[in-house]
Image (cartoon, rainbow, N blue to C red; front, side):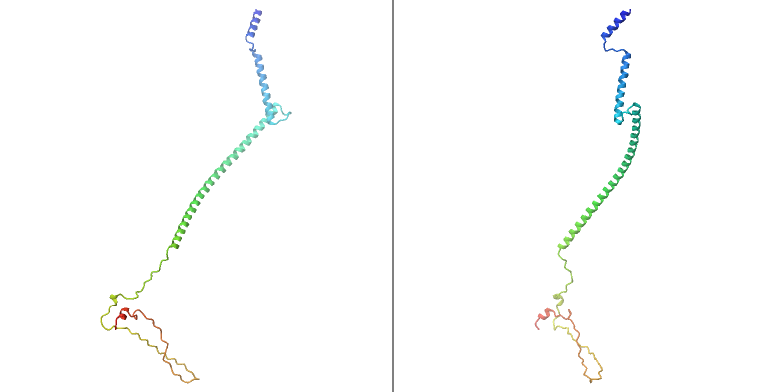
Length: 208
């Protein structure tokens, strides 16, 4: 019976040479895991720049934990700074929009002022190019119409002008000189002719 079992085992081993017993397979897997972990620890120690004295697994894990805590603190501080920067960015955006609105309003005012100045300059040029408006003064007629100046037949009645000098007596007592004759002649006041004193040309043109 024992010989038969050994023969069957040899036959199965010949048929499936890749088949390994379960215990050997488990040991191999554990060995592979340990080797893989050792490689990971070595890479981690190299990333943390640890010395050979602190390259043990416990020291590597401690340094890794401390590094992770520091990184978490830095992340929190960076998040706070990011929030502050976002708030400042929003404030700057609001100010920029206000400045843009003010700039637009100023541009509108400038354009309106330019239009006003342009209109005034055009109006000024028109006023300078326009002829001067003559002052409309009432002109007196140089002669009267025929209908008004026709006089009835007969001798024309002429207005005579008399100049009567005003007599003024100037008496100045003079003890040293005798009595001088008093002059009654005074300087006549000038009298300018009026429209009534002018002779119509029709009357002057008629034969006497």
